[in-house]
Structure formats: structure tokens, C-alpha cells
Length: 287
Image 1 (cartoon, rainbow, N blue to C red):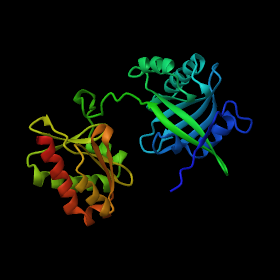
Image 2: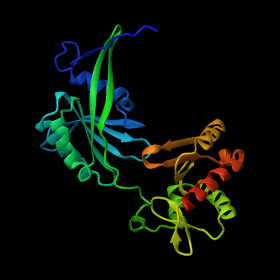
Image 3: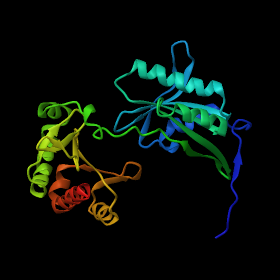
Image 4: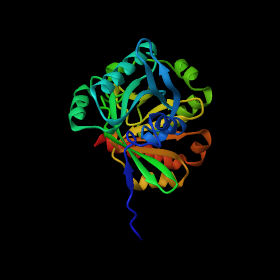
């Protein structure tokens, strides 16, 4: 196989493309920047007394919003300040959403990477380096995350943040069908680990036994499906088995998290496999 040398170019110094071109490319397909399944909510979003936000992206599942500032060339003080300022303005205007500041630059220098790292953990911020590669039929953009948002823990790790809820709350947030599907999944839990009860929280439905929480699995009824989650080390055989069965399963190594989107048909067709998943989650969380 012949090796082809890739030609990287500076967008800042290019006569053919500019920042507006980059914005349009990301606007058309925001998933290319590596933030997951996101959509574009706005471009050149006007800010009160503070210019315009380059791009506003939003996660399709969690509704988390990303305030994105694009910079050609190397990072500088003005763009970093602007990135944080736009994030702060948006989170104050729309506090019902989770927000994260994102700076995308051609060259994120070590000096400014150190400065950004000081903010991270207090200000949720992500730094992404952008590389432009010229090919025969055009120019491609490649994005590399050089600083990720610090994970401050998942809901469920600290029981004090688990705001109590009721079954009626979840019937409104999900549907009668998805809550009943959760009940069917819980019956499997009871067969494997008798004595547990459902614990209704604002962000998920967990498990408790004798007043002690043990969320070896938790449930999130949505409008179209139920999301089942479990924090445990991945079992490759189990992952492959679920994928081969057609289940919508994802494993997130960063959080040691299994996440399955389950519909009613999936339950009937894969009951034994779901039992195996829940049993594995229970056994691994007892270790």
C-alpha cells in the first residue's frame, strides 16, 4: 500500500478559506468536532454588549449546550476571555440547560493550555485543535480534543443531589408505556436480587434495599424508550452479544458506563439477554 503524504495548511494564511468557511463546515455537520451527537442551534449568535458567539451546539439527548469560539492561528488572551464570557452569558440567560465553553483553534499553545487547565473544574471548558488538510478535490478539517471537560461525577454518585421524585413525575417525563417497561425490567431485578425497591429521583429511577441505595442499574424512562445504565468494567463478550442481538448499547470507557436504549419490542425479544446484563451488573457491583 502506497503511503500518501498529507499536506497541512494554515487556514489563517490561506487565500482560499477563512473563519466563515470553517463556521459553515461545522454548521452543516457539527458532529465532526468530536462533541458527540450534537446539532447546531445558532451561528453568529448576538450577545448583549459582547459581540457574537460563533456557534451554539446542543446535545440531541441531554440538551447540554456548547458555546463554541473559533480562532484561526494560535490561541490568545482575547479569544479565551471571549470564550468564557459567552459561556457565562448563555448560562445566565438559559439556566435550565447545562453549558460548556469550547475553544477551537489551529494552534493551542502550551502556555494557554496551562491557563485553560487552571479554569477547568471551575469553568467547564474544552479545547480542540483544528488541522486543515489539503487534498486533490478539496480541504478537510481534522479536530483533536487536547483538553477535555473535567468530570465532576455522575448524578447518582452523590446521593445528596438526588432530588426525590414520584412515579407520577416519571409518567409525565416519560410515558405510561415506558414506565411500565421499567416495571418489567425491575421484575428481573427482583428475581436476581430480592428485597430491592425502586427509588424515584428527579434524574433517574434507582434502587434501594432497607433504605440503602445500590444503583447497580438505573432506569430513565423517555418518550420513546427506556435508558438502562450501569457503571461497571466492560465485559467484551456481553457487549458483542448485545450488539449482535440488535440492542442499542453503548459503553463509555471514561465513566465505565453501560448505556442501553430499550424499546418494548427489544424487551420481549431479548429478555434472557437483559437478565444476563442485569445479573452481571449486580455481581460486579458486589465485588
